[in-house]
Image (cartoon, rainbow, N blue to C red; front, side, top):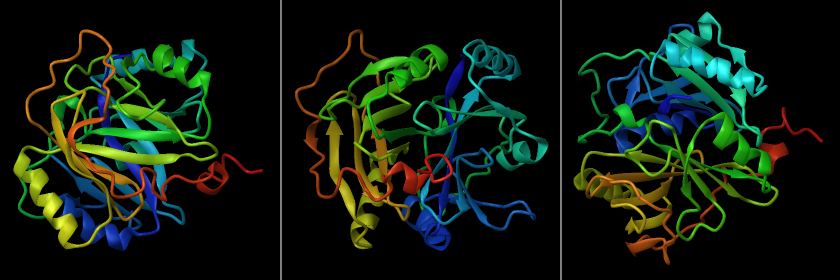
Length: 310
């Protein structure tokens, strides 16, 4: 399947009011306008797209869906045929759902762990429409996607590897440095970053561990870092540089209990001709100062009771 990367993220939260101030004031997101009929959602712009992050009111803080972007309608139709050939059950988004996402068409399906995925094409955008919520150099999205996500599974699942490799046609990156058996993957068309999605194992639990967002400069990372410290927002890891790619970043916890990794490229990622096996996760920094797995990772029946009722 010809997928560019993650076009948008969707979350449910019981903390919309906290996100409404945190998003612009800490992260520099722009609040996007809601549809008149939708008063219980909050949308954030990271660039000129209609939105990249959606938060919907709910009683549980959890990831709701991950939107994967196909290049165009033909690639979208090919993706439908490919999923059908692998007997993956999917539903076609109706007009109201497509309008909510701001896309031409979309389909929805679940991975073997239970996470909801969407494939879409042609999300709405307006040139020069992004205005950050605070002084900020901007986020790097475009043809690399909106960022990456690390999800946790309650147990090792051989069906997941098959799903990611054969169904989603993802490229394998590796196990990651210092992360045990967390598998890292990127889309077929992504040759700019090491991974779009990763799955770790948290025995008996699932949920989103962190979301990585790229910003334009070291200054954008540093100013966000200062704001997090000034506001006493809990951190997962301090400023540092990973071993496997030339990126500088830090991790802090947002109102929903998972971490944002704020990242900038010190130099472009050139790809790896072979699978790396670093001795340590980072060349410098990234001191662990908080839990690696936050309150966003819980027992499946608590997080997704509609899927895992006992």
